[in-house]
Image (cartoon, rainbow, N blue to C red; front, side, top):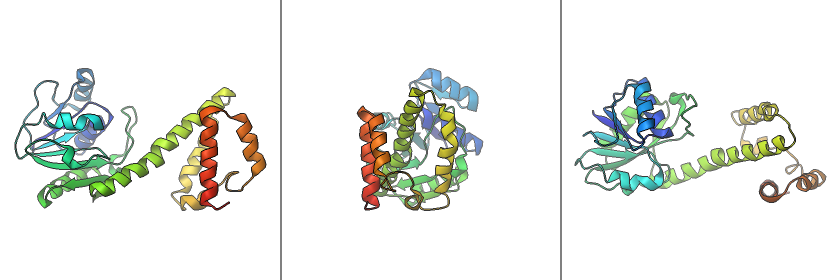
Length: 249
């Protein structure tokens, strides 16, 4: 099977690397950013192009959500299989006379961060059983966790990921702003962060909740509010309100 990855960003790089490490041949990586493509090609020994898209049996589109539809129109081969990697878009966003699918890897990707691809869940949606088997076969060579998912379910998977990853990372960023403002090394908070994450491997997150909001410690809550302003103050109030409402305090 001839496989082409389209894209040059974080997802394209890691998916290409996962393919190479698991001996899944790639015919080409295609995209607009020649500098990034050259780096990926040099590291992974994959042919690349910014102009000529090879004919393939399977195209995997790894670009930003707002670009998926336009990029899909570049694929003119009929009856091939085309899959995007978006967590929120339906497979019908793909425009062309080919079979449509999605191959969604549930992970946050940065090129500089090494990942254990075998732990990354892959969610698959396709138009027919044969394509489902094809994508399952490929994804199962990479990951231990592969399952089928409708677009409706995948929307909730992506929403959950935003809460569990993007929002949490934003809170880390806000926390670092506070520690930096007081010249407290943020590294000192890493053991606390590690323990917080480790807990949810062993217990339900709701049962693991600690802090002044769940204790309904109004004195500490008011003290903290006096130390904050602007967006951080609003986040603090909103988060504490949500915690207290969940625990009916």
